[in-house]
Amino acid sequence: MLNITKNANGSALSFVLEGRLDTTTAPMLEEQLKASLDGVTDLKFDLGKLEYISSAGLRVLLSSQKTMNKQGTMVITNASAEVKEIFDVTGFSDILTIE
Image (cartoon, rainbow, N blue to C red; front, side, top):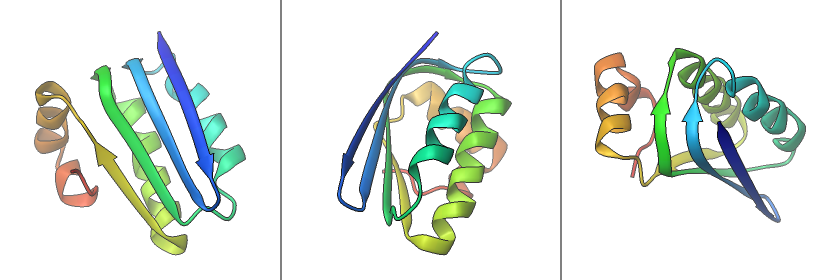
């Protein structure tokens, strides 16, 4: 299960993700992103309450990063040690901006 809290403020958009981002829940996030990224120059993901991320979740983040490379910046904050380890093992920590 994944809870997605979306906060838009002008050209800034943030998502707070809580639960698991996996093959079941990744399409939900992808749908919300596709509907929301027009005109966004500052995208932020707060992963403080994200327990798990699968390859499907990583794919959604990578797709978002590619979009934001063309129109602004994307930052990931509050990733847990477990999620950071997944980013490190997959090489995503070199691709994504993680604070």
